Image (tube, rainbow, N blue to C red):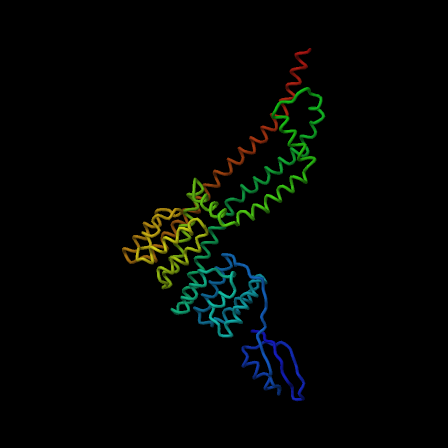
Length: 398
């Protein structure tokens, strides 16, 4: 229940201050009246929490539980209380859901409370909840959102799982190189110092080895600075825009276009099926694509839709979507089945994206192994070459 700060006066005229939980202010007023006390002042306790966006799977679980409970006839306040008491939740989630419940008890709509708690809840969720509150389809909308966020989370997890082995292999390459440059190669320094002249690969290798062995802290500082300044630079709008543009090009771009197209189609499907006007659907879906280069092109798309153009015609020239997307939307517009067609193409593109991620990983792994073998081979050649030359010189002298 919500917590209130109060100031009351007892029968002897003594002022009492404190905090108490109650359903609402009227309930607290009645409680003090029954105790023979006069409630002078009362205000809700505002618990400050550091707000951060919920993850996709957290949103999926939240929407699924709300949809299931409200569909079974449980009130929204009681449903939020049940959700908040789930033992598997983090402290942040519990505080967030309790905050939702407390504000709803005070008469605030769920969509408005979610807006107040920005950026905990994404715009898509807020707009769809707001539409559901108006249309009376709250439980259905929550379950649809749960399905969407589950699919998004599964795709993200597939991407992470696919890149796990390449990441491990990359770390092993770095560790092997550090051991070779920092420990193994310095062992050959005394041998190489007796030779009159070293081949160029060996001189390069020994220079790197000496730097790593004696100036390792400089290397550490450089790496930290690159990471820090790299993050700062990539957050600049113009830099982020160009990086996002590069993401849509080349072999990797084929995959990202599928992911962005599927994300747009699924968002449009959820919004349109909830009864939101098509122009508002485009406006909201624009902010869920996750690529600033594609999103920047939606100024023209929105203008075309506002002017009466079909969505399929408006997104036809968007650089970053696969051509299957506008073609499928056009079929949906012509047949009056836009919602189902959007959902269908989103499912197809999600499946294709998962398969493409698996194929891409199968290409990355052998490439990294070849790179690692080439580096180790270069090091071995640089070490063996001067030793072989010295033996040849000794043999020739003999």
